[in-house]
Image (tube, rainbow, N blue to C red; front, side, top):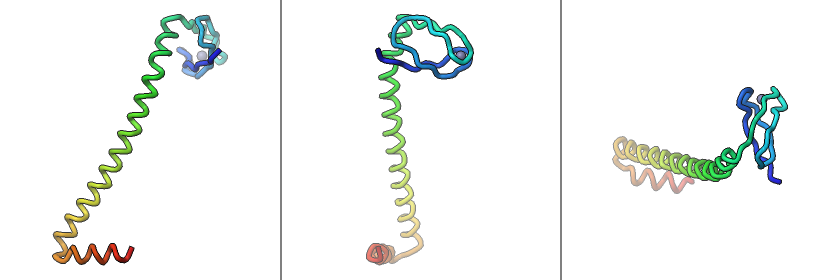
Length: 98
Ligand SMILES: [Zn+2]
C-alpha cells in the first residue's frame, strides 16, 4: 500500500502513514492522528492540485525572469540611444566583438 506524508497537528513534524483510514500515533510527541475517509479523499484530491499549482508557479517565475531580462536589455538600449547618437554602429561593434 502507498504511503503518504502528513504533518502532525501538535508538533508539526512529518510522518509517513499508510494511505488507509486508521489511527496513527505520532512517533515524536505521541499525539493520535485519525486518518479518516474524508481526510483521505482530501489528500487524494488536493495533492495533484498542489503539484499543478507548484508547476505553474515554476513557469510563472521563469517567465518573470525572462521578462525582467528583456526589460533590462530594453532599458539598456534606450540609454544607449540617448547617450550615443551612433548607437547602431556601437551595437554592431559590440556584437562583432562577441
Ligand atoms: Zn507529533
